[in-house]
Length: 332
Ligand SMILES: NC(=O)c1ccc[n+]([C@@H]2O[C@H](COP(=O)([O-])OP(=O)(O)OC[C@H]3O[C@@H](n4cnc5c(N)ncnc54)[C@H](O)[C@@H]3O)[C@@H](O)[C@H]2O)c1
Ligand SMILES: O=C(O)CC[C@H](O)C(=O)O
Image: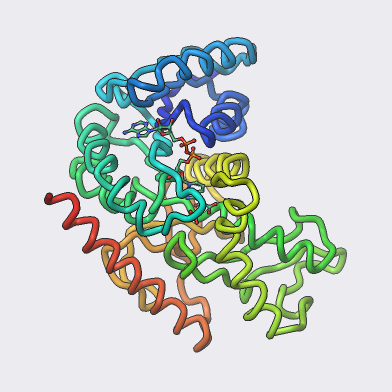
């Protein structure tokens, strides 16, 4: 069996981590043969709660767990880690604007970027979940200059899963038969969920989703806003931010990075933009990607129509504005 890898989860006493830790410990993310040492980082006030989480991990009796390190000290939490789930941040509550999160959370990612730079392996893969995820990932990477920018990504896999599930429901097919839905841009209501290149596995082979849906108005006027606003809908119903589905998506995202994407399949990742598809450069923009040997590549040459182009411009502009605001918060 392989040597254990060290995996840090920040915000380890919180809602998302409570589900995410199980996925990691069970082998759903890094593989059924990959032992893990779990580094669980939270703030000093949460150390009591974290003790309870550690007891529960022990009581899971899962064979892949080879150690658990609960801590409020970044030099311990990030020490020599191979993979990092950056979850620890304030979630939006009902009545809060998404923008309220930026000033509250972005400084956490500056500090933790600096800590990753100092203590983590240089080969670490960093997935940012805490909101605003794309801009936090940008800041985290900026303050960790010794780690390649391509090792940082922001999670839009929850939006991808939401879009995939909505299409499966509309078409009356199993969700696992739908693939290659794309999330473009920011993990925010400006994102573009795009079914143009999505496919359904049928008995007759792969069939394009737009052909099966056969209703452009539904795709533009219902599918897109439903996915864009799903996070807010969950908050309105639960009075708390999505957690079980966010944890599953964080595992899906890291699994794609760690184990690669199947032939012909895309995964949406918020990654440093090279300006592909007219996106602004040097922001963490969600693109369709393939992954091989832990290296992602933006899928080239996909057709995008005028509707998509106009939406990409809006979400790109939002990301550029968020980046400027975050940089100014970090200078305060
Ligand atoms: N990208 C996505 O799709 C997505 C989806 C859902 C939620 N989120 C975001 O994930 C974040 C976490 O959500 P949650 O529901 O788990 O929140 P939560 O409040 O339940 O847990 C957050 C945890 O982070 C901890 N924390 C705060 N500052 C920290 C720091 N500096 N270092 C380490 N830990 C710290 C808190 O003490 C708490 O235990 C939120 O920002 C939320 O908006 C993102
Ligand atoms: O705060 C929000 O609007 C969304 C919270 C979370 O990112 C989600 O998508 O469920």
